[in-house]
Image (tube, rainbow over all chains, first blue to last red; front, side, top):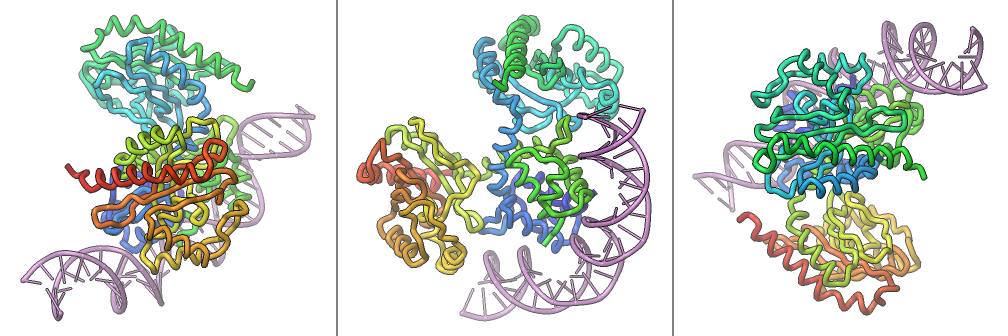
Length: 249
Length: 249
DNA sequence: TCCTTCGTTGCGCATTATGCAATGATGATT
DNA sequence: AATCATCATTGCATAATGCGCAACGAAGGA
């Protein structure tokens, strides 16, 4: 659509990985140095990128401000935060995530870190795999049928573990079950030995606006134990939905 | 430099203020609807903006991720954080800021909120007034003379309060004194009844790489009381400088 | 059901971004 | 300290790309 703009956005995404020199940027974009430089200068003028003493480019400070403002604009996050913290505490310090559907992807909006020192690869702002996470399934399950088909058609059913759902047919079955029971499991489908349960947050009209999940490593609690957390998970999502409905007061 | 890119960046900055419709965006940029739409679509494709059900545009989730990554790339922030928290605690729960010079501006990199419920207008990522804040003075004071002159020439000596420094000559005097004594005051120059003291953080070569300030409302502590916090402030900045010098280990 | 409002698409024009080649600055190496 | 090498920067000609116009389509309200 807008060539120079998409190139500039690719620069920002690339700089998210780490610092780059002008030549590196030009090589990545496959354009002439001059072109890369003009884009970088424009970005720099508005503090979207920053140049250090050694002519390396970094993400600029404007992105701090926009980042926090973008988070603030997702009002559901503020409503959910206390409930997420409570859910994490009630389930014995497990990792809790909040995610929302945006533009064909499930995006993590908030995260409560596990008190156990097991690290998971997830980060606020990054997308969650739609076919291999509890929040992904919950969010896709409630999409309008037309959009749901489009999204499913676009999924790359790449296996993360031996249990990852491998095709669209199996995925549709799971989505149907998710809608019926109001929650869903992820039994080591994204990371081996990590089981999750997820459930939807709904607005006044009953539409799914976000998803919450609890993730537990096998060594802490076996799969059946994780399933036993579902009542607490549902209590949390229903509380968030209720707070959301009554938020204008 | 790059017209379409600067327009797109203006869109992002504008959306930081709140949601906008397509027509509003076009009006702000003073371009045709079509032009605004193409920019917005490009931004949306990479999740820099998000469209809600009512066709309003918001900042997108990619900015969360970039925002946190941008912060992570300012390594000084991680080094300073524990010292800032300790300084805040030692001074009785005052507001503490960390700022760095970037592209002609002083940018807040971290903030420890005051435990008193006095709110100050500052936010991580936003620029601090160079002539009316302690961190602004500290950072400009140590700039190479050439760049310093250019920056001073660009300052709009707009008064915030009756005590705000009003011209370049007075500002230069204060900068000289700042260099001599190694710290500086802001006596109600930015907000009435709020006094601050600020001091520099230096790298191995002695160059100023950041500034730390403590801000105290008059009702909590009078101006002389704030000046008495300088030893603790200097202890903190020196500790940060030392940690920074030995960080590679 | 009609009307209004707002987003979307196709198209021709020219403004704007691009690549090239030469210049200037910076830093490393001997 | 001097030379070389590397890398950023500038001017300029070309055409590709982004632009505005006008007509179409969709959605929401009266």
